[in-house]
Amino acid sequence: MKLDNPYSRTVTQDDSLPAAQAMLHAIGLDKQKLALPFVGIASTGYEGNPCNMHLNSLAQQVKTALPTDEVNGLIFNTIGISDGISMGTSGMNYSLPSRDLIADSMESVVAGMHYDALVTVVGCDKNLPGALMAMLRLNRPSLMLYGGSIAPGCHKGKKLDVVSAFEAWGEKVKGEINQQDYQAVIENACPGAGACGGMYTANTMSAAAEAMGMSLPYSASNPATSPEKKSECQSIARALRYLMAHDIKPRDVVTRASLFNAFRVITVLGGSTNAVLHLLAIAHAAEIPLALLDLQNISRQTPMLADLKPSGRYLMEDLHHAGGVPAVMKLMLEHGLLDGSCMTVTGRSVAENLAQVPPLAENQRVIKPPNKAIKKAGHIQILTGRLAPEGSVAKITGKEGERFVGSARVYDSEAEANQGIKSGEVVAGDVVVIRYVGPKGGPGMPEMLKPTAAIMGAGLGKEVALITDGRFSGGSHGFVVGHISPEAQLCGPIALVQTGDEITIDAKQNSIDVAVDEAEWAKRKAAWQKPKQTAVKGTLAKYARLVASASLGCITDGDETTGVPHG
Image (cartoon, rainbow, N blue to C red; front, side, top):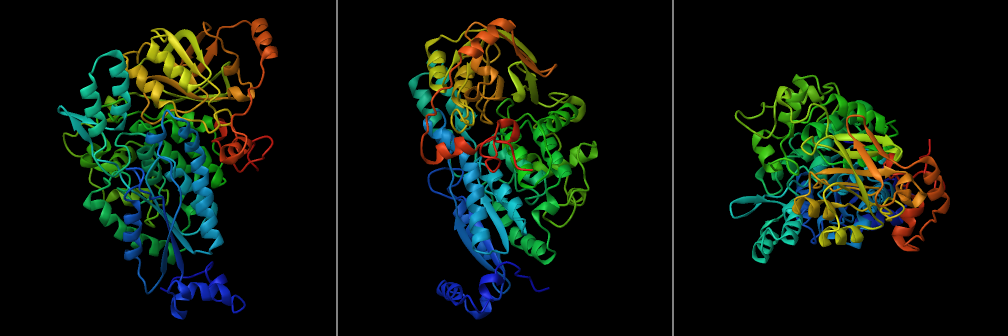
């Protein structure tokens, strides 16, 4: 079957566009080649980050695998920001905005250059949702190739990953490890190419993409440098040809049901709270209604089964050896936790794909059976209440308890909080409040991995809670609540909290409240003054103007004044 070129023919076959055709001849395409469809291969590869350092090579392998007598494969690049490198610095303010820049740039190239199909090659955290958002906006035959996760590091017989390095800082501050061991952890935590190895945001979103049907089976769990990942590049080419021949597009695959499948898999695997922001934004791009309450209902009905870092013991490499994400999905389907009828980029349904998948390996320890769940309901809980009337997102695995009552210790920046933890100001029984780090206030809603890792490293993980209008890395664990909305920059209630206020976080009642009487609360609100916006020009200033609430997924293509999504 000859593949169609519904978009590229606009510039390649119109006799009134000779300059466009002349320029395409210049890149090596003769008249016969111009009659073939154009496939964009969008790589987020760059040399500055282990998650992305190998992606340009994978993109080239995909291009080589495409049948040159049927399509023209054209590689282009977009940006990436390393969360691990920027964490705890002002660079982290650019992380979440990069998701939308990635989506915008992929959409711009594919639409602007009239490509007929798209393969995205992605690695670090924001690459994946950004690519999915672009594919859904464009709605042309598309699929995703995940670069895979990094191999574990090792020091003194202990497996390491990037979060080990963050937590080592807290251990050093407390005096539990010396400078030599601290330096050894740094030098051995990340041994080569691939995304961070635990169930952090990159692996969370790769599992979500596979569960919603937008990447091939095993893509999420095939390690970055494995033979399976190289083989996947060949499979991508075959799958894309099928999608183009049968005109299967992203919105045929991504539906409300498939988004529910994605969140169920995230819940079973103990994935990152960032998935909430990203699934809301992906749904918005697909014009599918999805709200925080939908995700809470799924979490209430779905157990957490995976003993994966950061709260557990194992890494994505261990899940790969246990059978990978498909084996987990097979177990879920057998227990009624997945909708098997959803379409995938293989051209087959979820159930049809899983029929050929072996079950989880015997004696594997990564995934618990449903009757021995780590947590009977999901670890991601949506909390509302006086402190978060629009909602907030908690990561409660159960190991830290499900209710925390403590005294507020308020900081107006992450840097202040880090200093407070380092100096010993934060003590057992505190609820650390980090505010003015939301989507507009940050701006950019930076992640609070450094303070949570420092709290864990200092041995306060079960004795201190942390709440914020910012985000948490997938590597964060402990009693943490983020995405508090409205944010402090908009005079959300978190802006009115004072050190010493009693805060109650209850994951059973799904509430987050502060014990301050109404008269005092009204007095504080009347006295509140909006801080000056720290970013007055450039990309962060633009982001602060455009970004909507975290409760809506921090989308940037809604109404500029209200932040409410169009439609």
